[in-house]
Length: 148
Image (cartoon, rainbow, N blue to C red):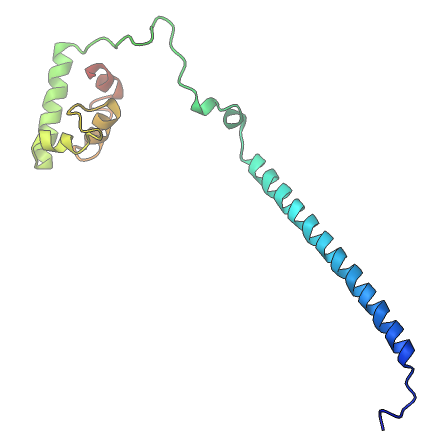
């Protein structure tokens, strides 16, 4: 019979108390290890992020406006195109719009983001290079800038 057997109840109680103390210490150690793991993971992510930062990105040089070339003042426009070059650009745009199969004003109107009726340089470039399929060797970006 189990109830009548020689069992030292006090020894079992002491063993249970010791086990509870050990479990409590193990739980505290586990919490400490989890916190240490989180700190090391955060440090690893920061270190990994630092590996992709170049000096140019770190100094934010890629976000700076391009330096002004000597001889050009800010706000000064580029010299306008010569009439023969302007005529060449006009003919190329007209031919490309006819090949695209649409009216030029409707086509360019799709690229007018602010709805002002005037295209910015980047909007005109996107229209010429996209649906009109005019490559940069036919009408250069410098020619586009001098149109504006």
